Length: 279
Ligand code: 13P
Image (cartoon, rainbow, N blue to C red; front, side, top):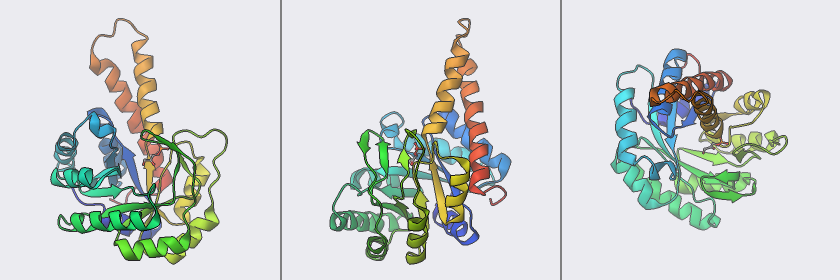
């Protein structure tokens, strides 16, 4: 069933688990994600970044996700990840996305609030919830590299109140992409943010975090967990391996293994999110 992410993340926050939010780059990844979530009866958010949308347009992603979602009993939402402009958010909404992120984290707090509030107002007319970002998640984010700037809880309170976001991404030490060395997550900060704001909190940079840290983040109140790099890596490794056999000349023979690898990995992440059986 195709739905917005609003109820999914609200229920997850209330019941102490996280909705997995998996980035997809192609048809096979979308198939793999839905199939894994169906098998484990997990709600799911499928998301595309602006760079993915240069490869697969919003109406293409939406047509595929909706068609598959309508044939399954689990709730599926299609989310714009790190929406980079008001215009891209508008286009995604127009093409049927059921969840939107506007990333104003590079702006000043006032400008971030102003842009996010404008996107919330627009998305409201479609009945679609919006995720904002406050503080900066480090690492390679789409095509941008940056350092972590921790979210300030008192700013989060203002952000929530003045923008009307349905959820927001907090910077607590995670980074996009693989980590150089051990990741350091500030669980005390996460706890404080969760105490002070009422909307669900999103954890970005889910790849390469040890399992016990993910479980702890979920137990500390993360209601949406974003995973991209590990899925892309699993797909790429499977293709690489399949193509070592030079007699392979059919995409089904290398994209099939990529799809299987992504499906397996999604099932592992669903277990860490605690979302199994919550569809
Ligand atoms: P990773 O690529 O580190 O899994 O981060 C995903 C993410 O946060 C997408 O917004």
